[in-house]
Image (cartoon, rainbow, N blue to C red; front, top):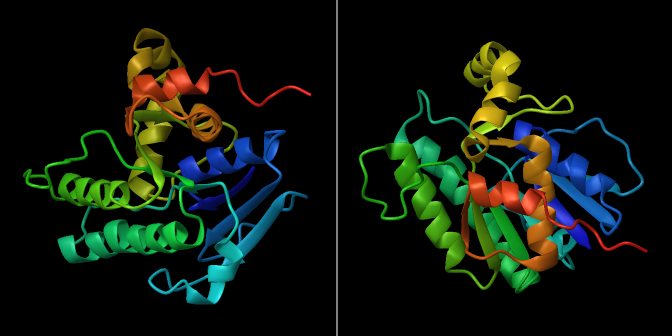
Length: 227
């Protein structure tokens, strides 16, 4: 399969990129971002693109793919609703619409968040915007799936790009393994999320919106076909 990863420099994107490069049934990975990753791999091709609201210069490079793993996102802390909407909703739907046109029916997996508001009417701004983004993607001619992880345990060098999250993870990290054993349905790992995304491309999923428990079940799936 050929896959696209948006946001590969972030914590979740790092995990998804790693698992995609390791998967024997993935033949090509295109990572799209605003700055170079500084990684080299025979399967990997990078597209550095600054304007996420205009993808026309790279549209041809995003044609002929089986899946997109959309891990691009920011924290809403300190942001206005307008700015948060532009990055969270508008960027995502520009990508979704282009890929639906260029790769109709492709699997599109969006990293949303636990508590996203599908009604778009709740009090929490970030949850409303995430819910509107999910609804927009689900209306497109794509095999779209929304991942809503809770606490994410970073593995294999993955780090959040948000300073506050990095501080929180540095405090919680020593206990993350224990938390995962005690409350397995509340914790995912960056490795597990990557494996779960690939499993959705291979075999689908029981519903379009997937929480931590469903993500973890998918992560334990059969994996790529054996030769």
